[in-house]
Image (cartoon, rainbow, N blue to C red; front, side, top):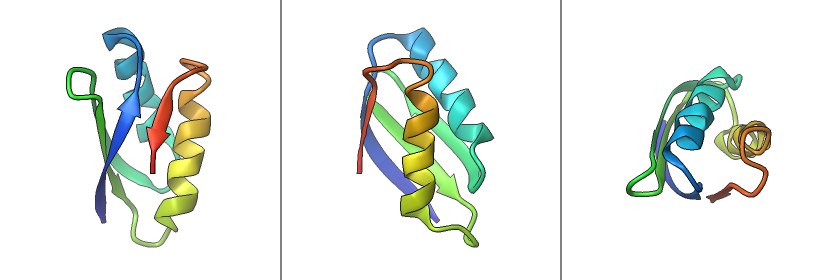
Length: 72
């Protein structure tokens, strides 16, 4: 399953680091973060609950940029 989320991130480098963290999160097959459009596209492993996984993605991304936000 693929979903798109509005995000809030302050710099392009942080967006790249957030993308890497999202990809490492269990239950994520692939993730793409676009700093310019402030969007994150996530492809989930179907055997995981996408809502629980995106909350874990946000938790991991906050390690990169404390005030980042993913709107879901």
